[in-house]
Image (cartoon, rainbow, N blue to C red; front, side, top):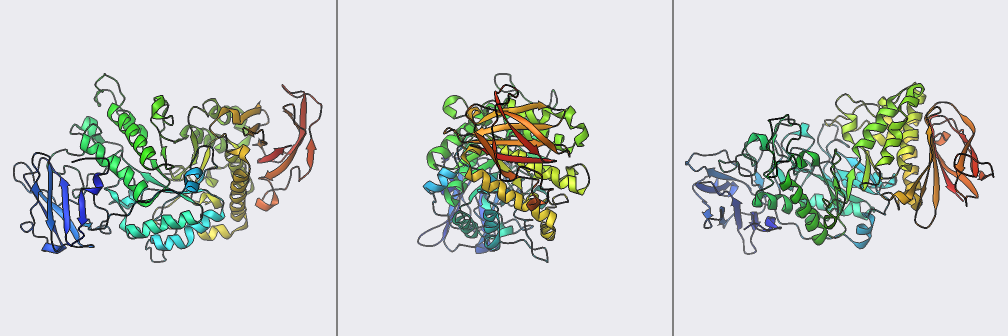
Length: 608
């Protein structure tokens, strides 16, 4: 009975003439019944009938209706009762700690407009604001903001800062707040923490009305062991691998889906299609891809089972990714998929017809780790770590990269981004401004976690809202203004984004000045529009710093300076003057420009 839209059959479906049809896959159960509000939770009232040897059970409950709570009552092969199970295909669920599924209507199909589809392309400006819906804002009594309440402020705020997309950390139903949603049990249900599926759909529509795309984190890598979930669903390892060497994640104490089982593959593929097709979201960011690609992920020798060829790759997961990406490409044109993949697995973002996994983008975890380590160094020591800022360009165009400064970088003792910057308070803010400038000038799409747009001074706390009062302080407000202007500059100049994923869009001008910790490069588009970006990562002003420029350059004009007083800087720079290229050789070039480089700053100059 499985197919690519198995959510259209399985689960609880209200019927046009009244009543609800229930269907569930439980091939190793001896009996299955549905219990709920409609039968006083009595397992004897509504047994399901098994359809031949398909393992599918179904029944119609004539007086069940929308909003009714329900679960499945199963007995294993030996006739022993199992814990009541939530519906794997439930489209809504109770607010935790309650765990029942709720009869909910199947959302109508939605498709991306041509404008939205174009905005997701690799030659488009993509700047993502990552959000944890449970802690962006909260009510004074600790209650979560609903989707309706978030819709009143979040899209407008994000759009005002110039971001192009909102990325939501997992909003599927999940039992434990401390997992941040990454241990999900509701692969088809928006979490009851924030309201109904209908209110989530409205939130997406309002984001689109603000010209914002919506990306949802999606977790097919693992699931928690909670008794009401799909673990040991019919008394057997139905959704998970049976052998712990394949089926248990020791890092997270969770279970791993059996990626080789047809019905499980269809369950996951249908979930991916459900979110994109039924809510009209712009894309899925797929979590923990590396853990799916390798059978020996976080395992020592002897603790994992090789694939059929004797290798370490999970061939079933690899083929599943290809199927999902091909299906979404065919059924939801314009929607994108993004891989959080932390290894050098080849062709993650290459098309499947070219031997790739078919993702549109991949998070550049190496760039993030290297550059943050560099920025954490005292400027006096940075000369010895110069390569950390240049190494990313050795592989920058091997994938379609997104540069992430994500939630993972501001938790578990890592400190906030501001807190990781060295020096006194002024230098910390200056370092952060310079780093943001470096990031926005660097090839690759951008992602910034909420709170970092105003330099949150403390680590992220998922149990509380962001420290919004801090954003009113002038130093923090300056960072916020910088992010707004960086996004504006990025979106206005095709040289900064059109060839983000193409080596033709980048050219080093100064990559080896480790003694002064200066970097300079050109960004350009196919039409020849160019932007000169220069970063000075020491607190020294570099007057008359000469940079060789290619032939045809007549002059450069500064258009953004992270040291501007507008952002809290010292206002050293090149003002709005047109700086002519001079016939003075420098490096490999026969002409050059002379610049004033402000301390701990990045400057952007349009090439005339």
